[in-house]
Length: 197
Image 1 (tube, rainbow, N blue to C red):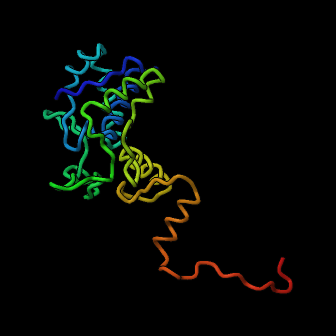
Image 2 (cartoon, rainbow, N blue to C red):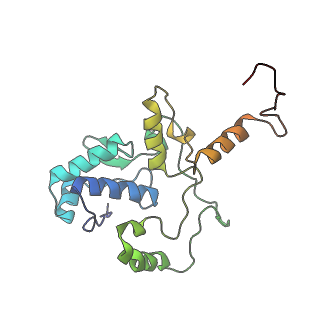
Image 3 (tube, rainbow, N blue to C red):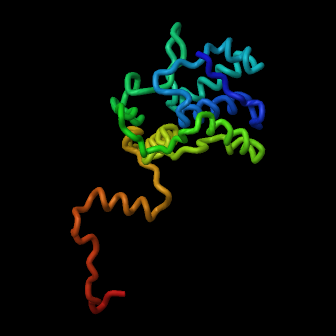
């Protein structure tokens, strides 16, 4: 596995920076479902950190349900094959001879990398998702976090049933569209009754 993130410019504890880089790589498509992360010793050597730091980052990514670890085999990005929800939350690759309009990709080779370098001066956060759109339902790592948050209230919801919205109005609109038929009455005004405030 040749994936090695650059965490040198990220402030804070190294294990948090590495865990964040793993999540960003999964969201950005650099680490696909089923991809194997580098062995802890190799990545620690390449990043100049301790094996314990990498181990803590991998453990945090595992607790966030981004990766799964198998003793003797390694650490892998979660996907449909090892997802206990049984669903595939990643978009399918486009078929041959089709134009994928879900996510814009520039036809200019290397343009994304050039834009990333140009925007790097404005901060490390500018490297995320440049020249691309988020999935319609939200990034997988965010949906997993949402499912974990909902579980605190006692509801078990698989990540593929979590949809991120931009606010309460959009959330209510999506819920009503899913529950009500076209033309169906949602709320009816009732005439004022005596004695009612």
